[in-house]
Image 1 (cartoon, rainbow, N blue to C red):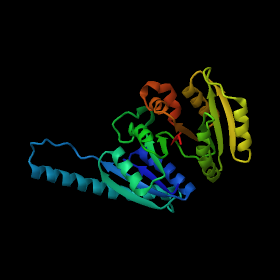
Image 2 (cartoon, one colour):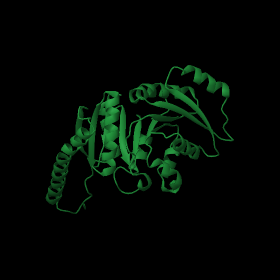
Image 3 (cartoon, helix red, strand yellow):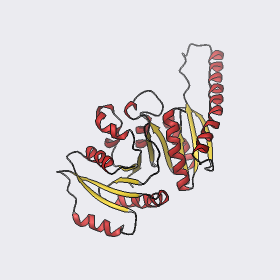
Amino acid sequence: MKKILFPTDFSETANNALVYALRMADNQKASLFVLHAYEMPVISATANPVMVQDVYKTIELSNFENFKDQVPQIREIAKEHNLDHVPMHFILEEGFLNTIMKKVVKEEAIDLVVMGTNGNSGLDKKLLGSNTANAISSLDIPVMSVPHDAIFDGVKSIAFSTLFKTQDKAILDKLIPMANGFGATIKCVHVATSKDKIDGAVVKSWEENYKDSPVRFYIVEASDVEKGIFEFLDQENIDLLVSITRSRNFFEKLFTSSVTKKLSYHTYVPILAFHEE
């Protein structure tokens, strides 16, 4: 990963995620692209065109001034964490966040997006709430979601949710250099339900394949996959959950308020979502 995109609305949630974005960039020897997107208000078609133009110019200038004021604060956060050596590029764009992210990802050949989310209050009207789930499902690259309550204290234990599919190995192989950079162990976890039993021989072959890597394997029995994952996070003191978006279902559940008990786990564990290859 050489280019990491970090969208921000300059909130506490975003500033918290910034530390993770900087750490990931440092780990990967990558550049960080800091993006702020803002939306223009909808003004009645009957309004005076000159007045509308003046309003838009004022809003653009206001956003530019705000962005300009925020840049030193972002650099200060980097300095506080001894990460001011990480190369940073700043982008200000008008438009919907998700649309702008797609555009920047394509134009700049971005490898990873790191963004903050508000956890339990993720469906409020803050830019970085429900947009996180949209980004995970609509972007073709990995997206790292950092909850508001996550505190970066190193990454020593990474959980990787796997079905032991051949495609999962491609993701695991990408994670190993990252884990080595952090000095972390990857804990591959498979939740076995009554409907889904994994062949022990398959697990053995994976263990043999990764015996010289910082990878360990765990089979967790549970009636519900999400519940099994969250309990594993708690028991193993996981610092980062890596999952594969085989469908939107897991992440839709993760970011909806109806799963409040499960979401309580998510308030402190960042999630790195890859697409199935």
